[in-house]
Amino acid sequence: MEEEAGVAMDNNKSTSPKPNAINSLKLTKMGSVSSKDKRVYKIVLTGGPCGGKTTGQSRLCTFFENLGWKVFRVPETATVLLSGGVKFSDLTEKEAYKFQENLIRTMVQIENTYFELGNSSTRNCLIICDRGVMDASAYISKDKWEKMMAGNKWNPVEMRDNRYNQILHLVSAANGAEDFYSTEDHACRSEGVELARELDYKSAAAWVGHPYFDVIDNSTNFETKMNRMIESVCQKLGIDIGDRLQATSRKLKYLIATLPPDSEFPPFQDFDVVHHYLQSAGPKVQARLRKRGQKNHWSYIHTQRRPNVHGQARIEVKTQLTHRDYMNLLAQRDDAHFTIYKKRRCFLINNQYFQLDIYREPGHPRCKGLVLLETYSSLTGDALKNCMPKFLNIVKEVTGDPDYSMFNLSLKEDWSTTKKYCRPTSHARGATNGVTSTPPLVLNGQ
Image (cartoon, rainbow, N blue to C red; front, side):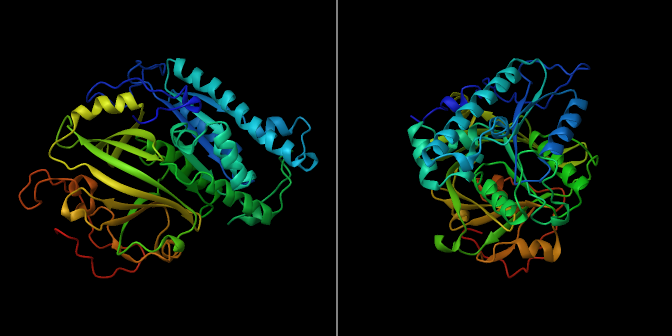
């Protein structure tokens, strides 16, 4: 049997969803919701020094309170402890190791206090964590981190993937906005620009592998950066904000010719991923389950996709599940679809977070040898082209191409005869957004 969430996830259990009843949020005038519709959404704001985390907390708090949500802000544990007179330079190696271990234990307990308050609230609740448990790994060697994890029976899937719903990395001003980098307004901050850049990269690398990890860089002015952060949270929650934040970030998908050797990749995390499509309430609604894990530790997500809601091209509502919920919902599997098996490789390069999906057997012949690269970006043209991984042979962009939709790829029937093949309302085949396109790769079975 797959292992359930451990100590780090004690307060992250969801209630069992009823079949086809994971609905959009329903607010009353006072912001309270029925227990079956209530959401508790846990995010981490991380990043290097002077990235905008303090302002980001305030902006998110104001935005969601205006929507009728209850918002809790979890203080940064390291700042609380360091402000008490602790100096790393004064600690022995053994003391520094024990300090980091106790810091994580303290952080978990503080967070759990807020998580319990969120679970007992009668309103939708956003919990904003100023850094999370994986940030500690940026300040300790890999060997010591693995020793600490093993000694406390912690594992990355629980500490990173299951504990928080979304990670937002706010890139330090030292990386791309150097003129605005300052240490004057933070009592515990003394880093120079070069060290700040290094810490920024390390804090991002600590979260590589989380399924909903968004890097908010300095490619725009600060005000737009804050709006992009809020828009990213609203996207993941499936909240329709129209053009209030002038959203520009979009999901991009590329077809990759072949998988290069592992040695050509930057540091990465590999996951086993299994998708099951479920019977849905109508022809325009898609529902699926995802099981994602490493070394037999798993996270479970239910996704309901509702297209063309209030003018938005797509709304996806994602709900974290327990193993028990997942097994119950498997009874609703749609026999018109194959189960999809993938290896998902996550990596960070050029301040851009990428997921590489390598399709595995068993499955439809059309998926044999298929490798797809996905990322979210607001960049276009040469700026987008320059941040793409140079070691990957990108055949073409397939964003919005129904032939590369997982829903269509998983269909058991032939595309030429099935009535289930899903076509988007609009699709500009072959658009590359600045990435040079080569003749399309002919896939097996297509």
